[in-house]
Amino acid sequence: MYIIRVTPENIEEGLEVIWEVFQEFVAPDYTQDGIDCFYSEFIKGEKFRKKFADGTEVMYGAYVDGELAGVLSISDLNTVSCVFVKGKYHRMGIGRKLFDIVIKELKETDAAEIKLNASPYAVPFYHAMGFHDTGAESSYKGIVYIPMKLVLDKENT
Image (cartoon, rainbow, N blue to C red; front, side):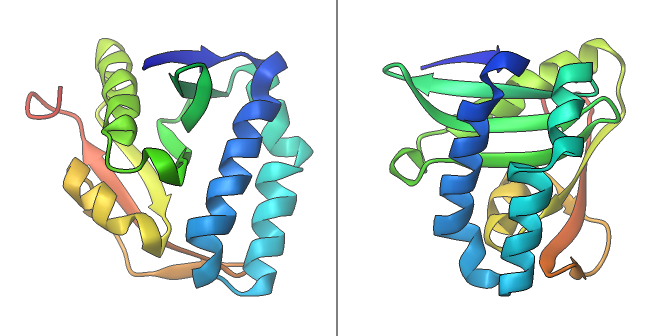
């Protein structure tokens, strides 16, 4: 396995992984409005895509035997927008390795924390990674999430 930054020219492959994994693991907890909103804002949304082109968002891809197995995208404000790993690669440490790369790079910039809005499905993973809830479960246009953060210190290298 290797992890690299996904170039803006190759972002479609990352978005395909996000959509595939979202449909399988996250969508079952959402209303149709939430599914439609996620698709229109993240998969097809020009505003989200523009962030990769202008560098305000970066995506990391984990490749196994040449296949994109998982992705993590994060903004220049240290907010994770997407973490998705294909089902056949779950429980192989791919999500953790994606975070390891991001945490290492953020520590080099003296960042204090990483924030994200976790889907209910992903909460156990984020808790295992050391993230803590910062608020109650909420919803935005049918997208259900729990706000979380990870304080970057010597404990999580």
